[in-house]
Length: 244
Ligand SMILES: C[S@@+](CC[C@H](N)C(=O)[O-])C[C@H]1O[C@@H](n2cnc3c(N)ncnc32)[C@H](O)[C@@H]1O
Image (cartoon, rainbow, N blue to C red; front, side, top):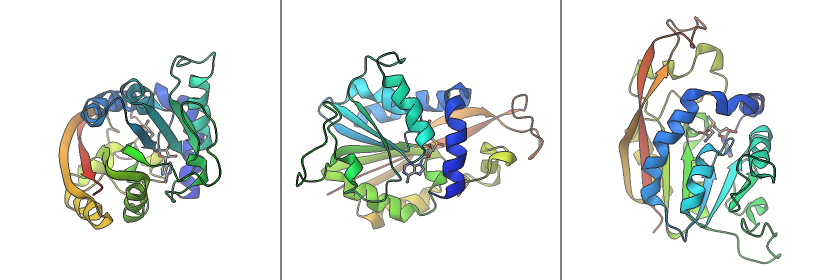
């Protein structure tokens, strides 16, 4: 992740959950992720932000390792999980501040349930499922991130990621013009993502429409009136595959 991206997300962290379209997008996405979950699964949420998705999936899995490179985002999630926080009852989520590029990143070597650091020499933790929501459009090198995800999985483990689709020039309107810093692409293209995931080694790759998000946009690009602008509908894709 680039420097402007981290600065942007640190600044946005405190108010992240007050953006209604972010919250709605997560609520819609959860329905797509639940069929991939199982009570015995250790999952990793890549680019977890303030943990909106992680906290909704936590009751359906054994543990969630919630990773984000923006410390501001991880601070908000940590506060939610603290004894006086809004989600103090959730004990199986481990927030990790890391720009995840290495499946053997030592910051992942913590047991989410006990919070104990695993002994030196313990094999690197591997996951049953990696999820990631609204992150891919910020990632400069998609091939590299899918190789990292592949490395993070157990044999037979699955990846399931959601983001808005690049369905043509109108996809650019997902973000107001003032928030294009760190936007690497205006959504994901079906054929591109399928190819990237297959080249990373995933089997049985599927790329499907998951849901449609109604979202306010600027009345004209750059007008700065997103709060009163018209509502456009943005298709979201769910992209999944299995590590053989
Ligand atoms: C648009 S936000 C989405 C946050 C959250 N998934 C949600 O839907 O509310 C994208 C997040 O991905 C994080 N991110 C991007 N690339 C990352 C990487 N390689 N490792 C960890 N976090 C990353 C950013 O810091 C940011 O918080």
